[in-house]
Image 1 (spheres, helix red, strand yellow):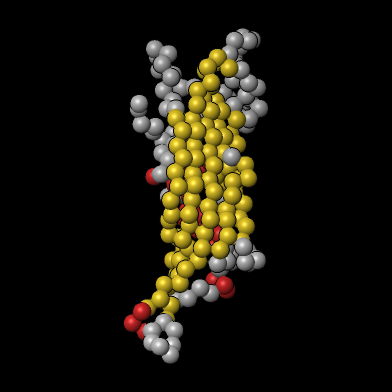
Image 2: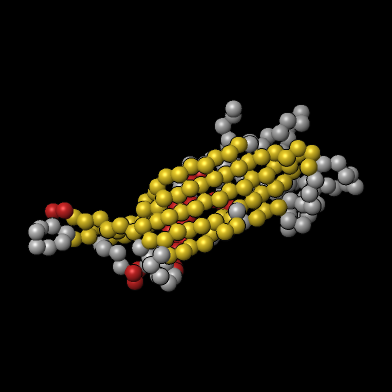
Length: 194
């Protein structure tokens, strides 16, 4: 079974519309179907903020100093790449993946000390399958689902909520999302609406 290769979400070159979601795949009056490539991706994240302590500064009467803090992120990433043979539909589709941040500790604007990031709309690409001159389909197919943990947002000292603002949310999300293609090769970071 061939290894799925990362794909680039390139619009079908036969189409001229700027908006591929409403452009028809067929350029003639034909009603016959086409082989269609469909990609769907989701990710769900759960995170917890940790302080890293200096054990050399601890004693029976004092707490150790926090030398840094970070987010430990548990992820589940899923991609599905399929070919629908001889299918018909109203047009190509590029649906960005939408994520929603929910903090468990009521933090407003930032990540806080714990919470989840859920996919509320799956990222989807639907287009005519790419074929070579012999008519063989070039798009890789398969399903990938991986779980694991990553570390992001390392900062010096103990966690300080005043540094955990909405201005940092996008950067931290990019750090998390950029690690996923190494887990599922067909995960497309540019399909995520950050």
